[in-house]
Length: 99
Image 1 (cartoon, one colour):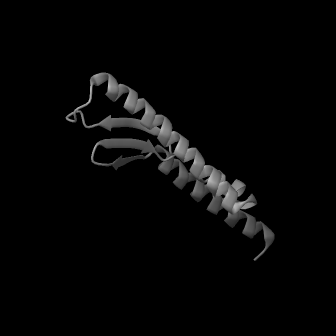
Image 2 (cartoon, rainbow, N blue to C red; image 1 turned 120 degrees about the horizontal axis):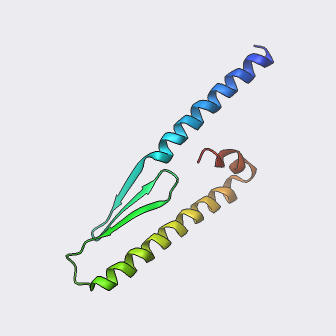
């Protein structure tokens, strides 16, 4: 196998990975618990928070709670990225464009 063929194969693999990552980025994922339902995209960005309104909380409490959950989840996603970077070292830079 010559170098040009190998480079072409590597570029093809990179394109497939990028296409798959773009599909994942556009997809929405839902997480649930007894009281909370959240929706996040493939970029790990929190899009929606819904809290069971049938619980005994005031309406003002729900708005503050929803905002706090968004901040906390986004903070946790950043910490995941940091941990991946620390564990994988220089390889994480190569992988970060695909994650």
